[in-house]
Image 1: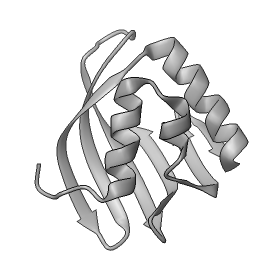
Image 2: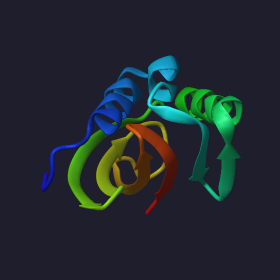
Image 3: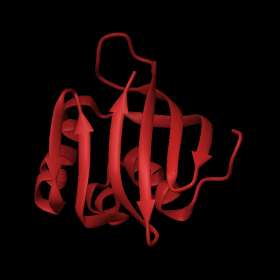
Length: 109
């Protein structure tokens, strides 16, 4: 990995690997936005619903393979394993941080 992750990202990935939705949601700001699988989820309730649905469906774990930072924007390459065709696969997690909170997350190939 090329950079040490800030605490909100460390906390997010640790919780994701435990399938702990409450802890996954904790580092997000109340008005955060998540974009995944062509859909956008805004605010804590929508993000929690997305987390619960994807956690139950895919049961993924993520091994952080690389991380780069540009200001408050972090791009994480993760080796993702779970219940989906082509597992494991490398996905990119693009985070924006503000005030030690995740304000935006976009997940893609």
